[in-house]
Amino acid sequence: MRVLISGASVAGPVLAHWLTRYGFEVTVVERAPALRKTGGHAIDLFRPAMEIVERMGVLDRVLAARTGTEWLTMHREGGRGPIELELRRVMAAVSDRHVEIMRDDLSEIFHDATKDDVAYVFGDSITSISDDGEVTFERGAPARFDLVVGADGLHSNVRGLVFGPESRYSAWIGAYLAVASVPNHLGLDGRMAGILGVGRMAGMYGAAHLDDARAVFLFRTPAPLDYHHRDVARQKELLRARFAGAGWEVPRLLEEVERASAFYFDSITQLRLDTWARGRVALVGDAGYCPGPAVGGSTSLAVVGAYVLAGELAAHGGDHARAFPAYHAEIGDYVRRSRTFAVSAARRIVPGSGLDLWTLAQTVRLVNHLPVAVTRGAAKLGAKGVRLHDSVRLKDYSAYERPRASAPPA
Picture 1: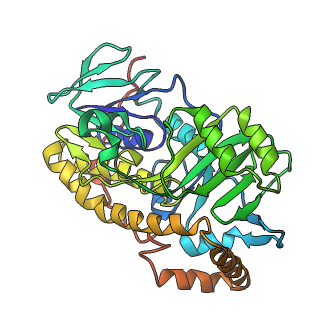
Picture 2 (picture 1 turned 45 degrees about the horizontal axis):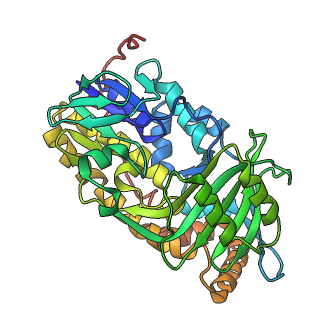
């Protein structure tokens, strides 16, 4: 069977890897002209995603590329002393197996693991998908595929073509995130530093293998902002306005944002589709069920979703009429719990009041003084909350694997 995947970031290559292991012929089309290698921003992989990484044979590369961030230092607006947090304690409570890695590094690892068995087409995009699988492209010639999968992120082109406008399914959950590549003028190594105030947070972090650093901004607004997700100038204008008057290193970081080689800005928005398949088209990862950037563990969810979708297609012999509902049933509870957790996290990640800021500082002090075993044990009592990822158990689809085929022609 011929499968077309739109998107070469994380979910797309993971899906491609497993489909090829099950004997499918896979093509991945990516709008970007080449694989992004700027590092991206830091993302988290929790235990189920790490198990999949290991099964894919890329565990050593993922471990070698981890950021190494171990400490968080946050100053507070108003002149009060900084908050110090040992991140190992927090992550040990969240997951028994965790890695923080730059998103583009992870994408490159997954691409390298699949490039010999998958046909990658960069610099092109799908323009239409017919009911019988005829696909047209912006640049390439039309072609027919048995199945099409949208793995092209929160603002998915495939979802727009098949499921309709994003506004039908998206729910803004109260905050915004911006990340920019900036010089590491603080010489950060193994530490994130920043400033925290009511309704806003700005910080900076590096990674052990990066020459530069990332500036990160999170902020709340009472209502959604007016901008287009591709209008970078407008996004930077909104960022400057929200962080006007902030202290610490924020003025310099805002100056660096203006000339940054890589810049990301988006709302913390959740997708709430009831189904992730229509006809012979399916959605995976953020394209189908983004719980909210930075708050819902969307990368781990995307890796697991891709693994499950490929496995259910293999288990049902490529019959999408049976495989897609099975995929929905298998991943549905994980998606719903991720949504619930993300809404709560979006409210907590940036303090909404002076009381919230004080409470956060006291909580951090408490965590720093508790043994790791105690924080882990307390978290396990609420497995549907902070440990929701580790509560996921992966199905074994190894019975459907086939001998590896030769690489597709160039």
